[in-house]
Length: 171
Image (cartoon, rainbow, N blue to C red):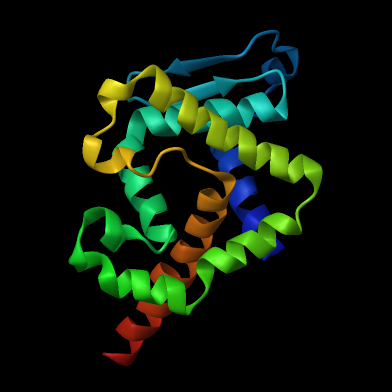
């Protein structure tokens, strides 16, 4: 479980941090957006980095992320209709929400604060820019650390392992 968590954090960190000598001299937190819409995050602490990453992800892909987090809860059919029953059933059958809870209970205080900062960034953006969130997906708010971890499990198990296995067996 921790392997998935750490792999995700490393991937996120690689996307967020520009590794050069300038990053060690950062004196204020900011997100700079380039002409392609890619956020470049400068942060004075690890928690502020993940907060800014959550903020920028919500700005760029808010509705999609909330849809995915709703699916990771295993309650998408309740939110958006019967077409989600099959994946909700799989999420519940595989106990992914419970696995996320177990993972969170086994993380260090620092790891939990990082995930909480990431969720706080999402929620702060949603509060500051409610007009940018579709009513349809706002039902998922607020985002909680549990949602972030459950989404990682859902992607790994359902999208990567199960669907890949199904596709391989149908060939």
